[in-house]
Length: 196
Image 1 (spheres, one colour):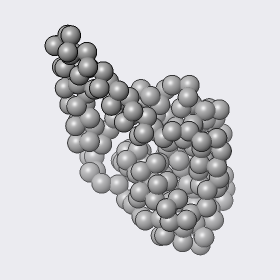
Image 2 (spheres, one colour; image 1 turned 90 degrees about the horizontal axis):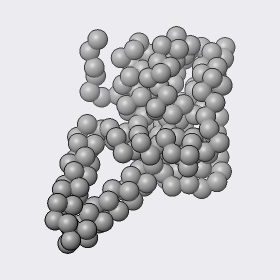
Image 3 (cartoon, helix red, strand yellow; image 1 turned 90 degrees about the vertical axis):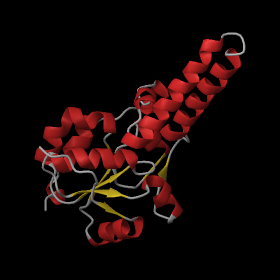
Image 4 (cartoon, helix red, strand yellow; image 1 turned 60 degrees about the vertical axis):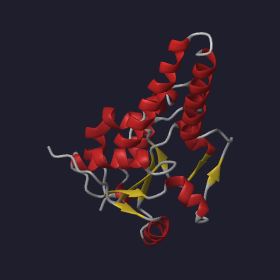
């Protein structure tokens, strides 16, 4: 099976027009349940990226018409889209810029309890680790290698469009929110109105 380097994508204006003209378009938010609870597109379902692999066959078999994938900035949605397209779901499309672009463009949003986004959490944790390792290196010179390790990890994350630290942080109770009912989200894929 070949892996594609890019995912099909549309901008927010095109996504909103598509949704307006075809209300059966399914919007799948691949952020953590905590991020989804903070703000999401009305009518969207939450299927966190870390659940896509575990349910890939079911998603591909049950999905009908057009599926728009959204996350915070587009990176996680692109990862999910690549997996779905390569598994045989060509109607999966990424909303470029994610919720950041959606909100900036004035798209409708359902808001809940405000939480820090996963990307902001990664910046905080990486920054604290680097700062502490540099301060500690005053007394323990080898501690500077921790800062180098974090720098290398962030560089790899940018080049590969993946983030191990983000995946670890997504497992924290803070990011799980009320939790995502994966079965309910997957059941939405089978609704008759969503078939092409």
